[in-house]
Amino acid sequence: MLEQKLYTFMKLAECENTTQTALELHMTQPAVSQQLKALETEYNIELFSREGRRIILTEAGKEFYNMVKKMIIMEQQFVEIIKKPKKKTIRFGATLSISEGIMPYLLPKMIDYWKGVSFELTTQNTYKLLQELEKGNIDFALIEGNFNHKKYRYASLMKAKFSGFCKKGSQYRNFKKLEECISAPLILREKGSGTRVIFESECQTYNLSSDDFVFCHEVDSVPVILNLVKNNAGITFAYNCALQEALKNNEIEEIALEDFSLERDFSFVALPNMLKTDDIFEIYDILKQMIKEIR
Image (tube, rainbow, N blue to C red; front, side, top):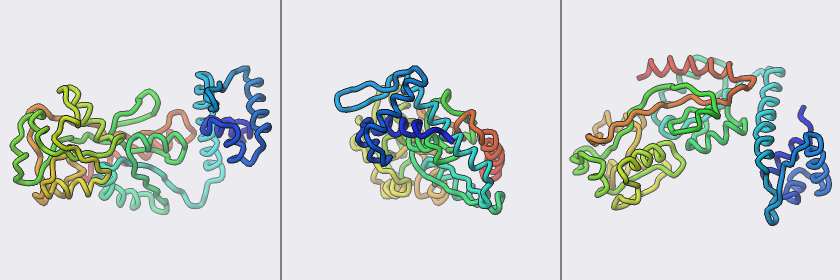
């Protein structure tokens, strides 16, 4: 069991205030300060510096924070492994495109394969999922966006085509270049989503941005975006797999842009060097095979 002063340090790093830390941990303020001082003395390190009323991490403190965070997750995994709960739970997250485009077909296969196992699926954008992963709230994440490859252990789950879409038969289907698209209303996912990051990154190569479009609507729901496109309210850019039902039903169509042809990895991402990391990647091997079967 990790020492209480390490948990006090973590809470102080998040609150940046000794009074608030003391309140949340049901401690006195002097006790918080005493535990912090004991840590700094023990490790011969300065963990915090003052910035006005805030107490912020030093560079050494940030490094210490990241190491302690990993230790806390490892402790959680250790307890889980030793106690061997009767009811096993696989907790994972998926970005919206994967959750709505792939999981309706993949999750039933997972439930059938891992009989007696409970699944907890969280749907968030890439940024929030990585936060949940680092907090130890999920075991792995299935993400479509860019991420720091040095920070995580990851593997490609599948390749997915990324295109522009409009209503079937819409005037927007005649666009041939990305630059022509700016005359149409644009419907995009929220900031922080993998889809948004990929699209805006590609736009930058053409010296364009979402601000150049005649209108830009921001929506954090794929079904709502899809409905807007079906009603000819504008165009969107997304993964083909996320819109496959509407494509099959001829409700929307791909905009065949000559200068915009993207294919991106959907990645399986976990924390490296943890007690459960190897076990988690055994799940990856099975999921990869399942995806081959449903595509």
